[in-house]
Image (cartoon, rainbow, N blue to C red):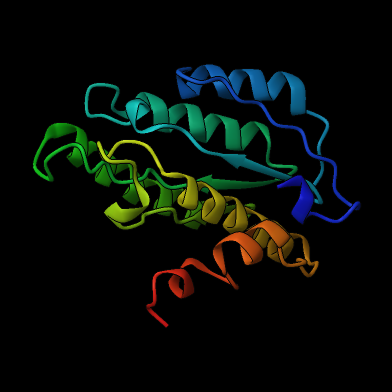
Length: 178
């Protein structure tokens, strides 16, 4: 992503694989408390955080994080579909439920935007749980475009995206839906 951003942006990334979202949000509060409305925070949790058993606690943590950070722009990435599970399993129902709640949260809080990341099965690895390499590139491009859109700048085209994969502006061109 850094290659696609102009030198106007500084990037700080807090990644904790396997970490629950509430712990990640607490860490982010400690580190990123002095950001302003001209800054951009992306919250992207894994689907293991969003099942029926955890219920409202994750939504409560996200809502508390938003209230604590109402001085900055926050972007929620919705919970991606899991193709390794049946549509009717509890985990799948939980993911769909949380995606709806994320939409409600973005409607309630003016400084919060939603970044849709639901994609076809072909953008997942064979087992259907993780994103494949192409989707990771597409998703990073979507994050960059969202950041430029929200912060009011024009993105430059990623050389990696356009050169290696022939990708122009969005994933619909990559999979022939244009």
